Image (cartoon, rainbow, N blue to C red; front, side):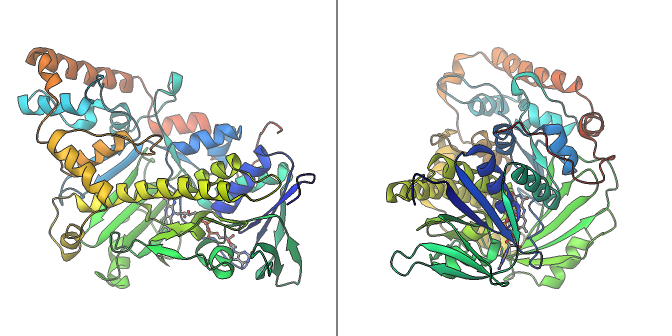
Length: 505
Ligand SMILES: Cc1cc2nc3c(=O)[nH]c(=O)nc-3n(C[C@H](O)[C@H](O)[C@H](O)COP(=O)(O)OP(=O)(O)OC[C@H]3O[C@@H](n4cnc5c(N)ncnc54)[C@H](O)[C@@H]3O)c2cc1C
């Protein structure tokens, strides 16, 4: 690459990954040309509608008008995930996006809660988390100083369209056509160009592989390699169906466990996204489809569509001058809605390590190490849901607990079980979540930090009760989630995607 001219970034693929990358780069990086190639003949994956709070910050960085984005994507707010039947067949718990209770310098809130449970003065762990209580009462509001953590449920197709408008308004060129060939430099092995079926040649300096499961560049051309994680995460199929809404959307995703997998429900303004994730070793596609179709509320508006996937990660996400973003880089099942977050992280890391002038090995290694660390922890967090559970009612659930967990996860579980302690690695994505899910899945610490005993029993009861009441009071002042949407971002009057209101670069 030459520092004196603009860097040309070619994005192959126009799903959520391609358009998030295009929007981020064209909006936020100077002195580049961005070209995105996508084929109208090859559909996008068509799922990926639940997000986590980091997306709110990605949008802020791009100066996206939130209400406009919500209207354009028929979005609703998401405060967490209701896990139904995960700990035991008939028990639910909630993984909320917020922080639970109040910590002290020596010990997290869970130690105070644990002692409270022992004394009979504490209630459900979630009662001390504002986001959980807000979800329980189907409420929502933007609070001052980002006082309520939230994410979104979005229509994936509309989101890509919305981002396309942003990208094009910041100079990204879209080329329609099917990529037929990926040309590599015979000496360096770098990608030089994409050749389309039409014969058109698109040359570039940097190539982003956003071709989804096809992974045309990173694997098809560069043969990068893939690390399978299917010994830990057994699910390899999903069936997705969209249904009509039958009630007001709730501000959370539902995750409903089955004897051989689990089912999602994602409420949007205009419809509900449903799907079932399962392992083909334990159930037939027909049975999974029937289970899904008999566990939906509204009338289906699409066919129930099978999606096969492979769990694992590309051995390098950045190889030569090609960066795999989205499904081309690997996949972890959507249990904690982490894929769109990983797209965003890849885009942001690429911006921070952007190779103006030349691709340096040190930048590539840094990118790969950071991404590998992040994915490894997300993988562990997802495994936790299967490994720690009281369910043993099927071979699937028995097998989920019969393997050795990854070393770091095994340590976290042991530490929490024996001492109630949780320590986070710097900048870790999931924080309070570790506690919420460990407790939710049925792992209550055997003991608590002795500093809690500095409080009298009465003081502890008052402390717990004050937090609980404060959260309830805040929630009682909030409007219903649906009312809030109607007032703030109703998509009812939007018939097509509106022009995004972005400030210039
Ligand atoms: C069952 C399931 C549920 C999921 N749920 C969630 C969720 O709730 N939350 C979440 O964060 N993530 C979720 N994901 C992941 C999420 O769907 C993806 O990360 C996201 O949609 C990005 O996909 P993509 O853009 O990489 O690929 P795709 O959407 O498949 O897009 C690929 C693009 O490449 C183009 N393309 C391919 N080949 C060619 C070619 N030869 N020539 C030209 N163009 C080509 C296609 O036209 C398309 O534009 C889920 C995934 C699955 C499988």
